[in-house]
Image (cartoon, rainbow, N blue to C red; front, side, top):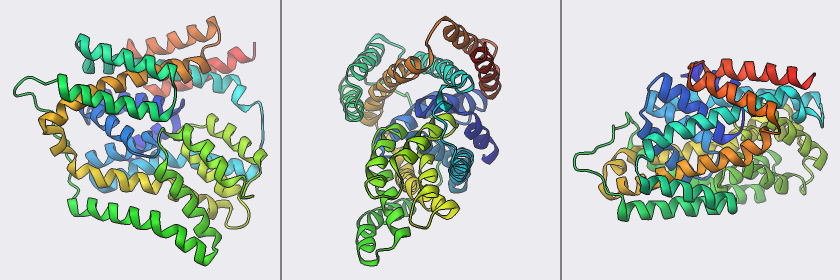
Length: 387
């Protein structure tokens, strides 16, 4: 588990939506640890939860495969590479404004187009097999493209669930494959108690102690607890928390933001960079550790708190009907993300389109491992940049 997600953490470029494509290729297509329907159900679950959805997805996949330790191993493997890179960047204080414009990074952005396109196609054939669900997916994509707001995405998922519950009833005997979740329900309830205790208690403790470590932990725990929409939404919220407080300068923040776009793995590891450069102490590696744990801890508590009830929910017929609608909406959300921000950020001309098509062919037709396609596309992008 640690090895699989470490490779994903080293090669998953392109943001949270692209990460789901990499996960699907490795976990569903190649290793067959879960089937397509279970994977889509977990995506829908993580879209409902606050916090970084791709990291929650990794935790959930690790738990379903290897229990609590599997979830921890998946998180460490997927998170640690980018967290270390961003902390080293903080130590080196390299503020290169041209970093995100390099040919190497551009090649990585282009390959994310191919990864997401393959994910959309594969999921659409399974989850939108009829006209009603295909129509729901297209409508969801159109609405999100017209109103690209986090609350709109949540509203679409909720509305799709209502439509599915009302109109998308399955055939008798249709049962999803149960996920091998062995977590006790008492542990799930304990996670919700811990979450509420920290959410309500940390601000009080911060006020009484005036401790900078507690202030750091409280700020990043609160952001990880209450934000919807993934890593891209976390970043501007963090700016409003750490820059006015004087912990980092706006220039430091923007330099770290650029670096976060250039490394693989979850965007929320940007928290490690902020913890490393923050003032006053703790900073450096201790500060990075505090902020990294704080921003991801809510995701652990949410996922562990709901997974023990997930199999029963998935077999409840009204809930299954709602999930059919939600899954169709998820395909639409991925389709919208394929265009904005991924396609818009990556495809700027004929050469970019050709490179993306080449990468898609390697993935979809020749079944080349994603990490090979990522490396090859990065090298080609660097070569084109030097022309």
